[in-house]
Image (cartoon, rainbow, N blue to C red; front, top):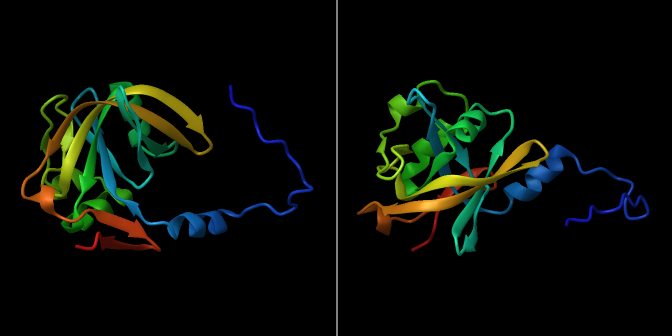
Length: 177
C-alpha cells in the first residue's frame, strides 16, 4: 500500500512550475528510445521516450511512461504490446521524427516487423529492440506508466557496437568511447 505524502505547507509555500520541473529533469541525461506499436488494422504508431527503465529480472520487465494525451497510448493499450527501440548515435533522425506530431514518420524512418509480435522495429536507428506485452498500466498525472514484460530481445549488428543516443539539456549526444 502506498501512503500519500501529507500536504504540509510548513515545508514549502511554493508550487513547482512546469518550466522549473522540465529544467530539472532536462538537466539529467537519459538514453533515447522510440516506443512503437500498431492498431488492429496494422497502422503503426510510436513516440520518442526518455522515461524508460528496467524494473524486474524475474520476470524480465521494464517500464515506459506514455503521455495520456498522445495518439499512441490508446493504441498501445488496445494492442496490449509494444516494441522498445533503443536508439544509437545515428538514430537522432528517428528520435526527432517521433518526438512531435508527424503523420508520415513511418514513411520516413525505415522499419520492419519484429519477430515475436510483428510490431515495428527501427532496426537501422536502434542498436537493440525489446518486444513487450503489457503487464500493467498505472495512471500517474498526465502520463501512464506502462509496465511491459519482455518477450524477445534483438540486437542489430553493426549498430549493436554503436554508442547509445542520449538526450539532456535540450540536446542530443552520444556515449563517449
